[in-house]
Image (cartoon, rainbow, N blue to C red; front, top):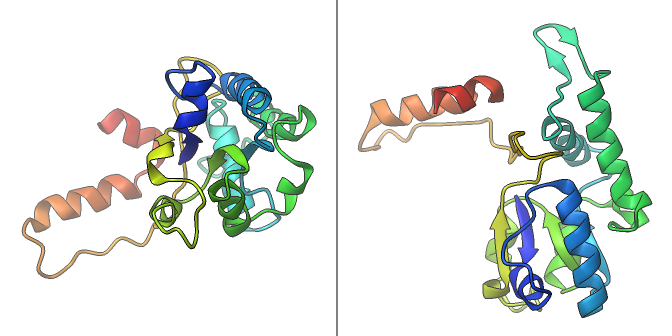
Length: 195
């Protein structure tokens, strides 16, 4: 999920969150200048599962992939573009160099501490925003959006985890629950056409 400071974007004249990575950079720079917020965008960049997931999202939102069937296709121009976008977040000063060591908790602490405009993180941090022991910003100041894409017309993708789907024995509609599980287990490319 893309978290953003709804209040800071509005104060800088932005009526909606970014749809492309370039728009995110533009909005982050403008809001940083206007508000003095330390970081534009924080995400999981450490060498672990979360960092790999974030990297995949940059690739996917650029129209690339890493596998096509059993064939590795990570060397496509689209995949390279996604990796270049991820790297540019640091090179362009939108994300701190330390993001290469950040996991979910570090990213969440920075954002909920009011020190970042945008954050890519898992859903649980929205609940933490309502806890004054965890957050110095109000949950009403936070907006949620789909991850940006490399250019208009491409599809947004995100990996929120949870490939472990179960059906409660007491579900009111087991057929619908099973269809949801089947839908979510399908590859992202086939899911978009099934909607």
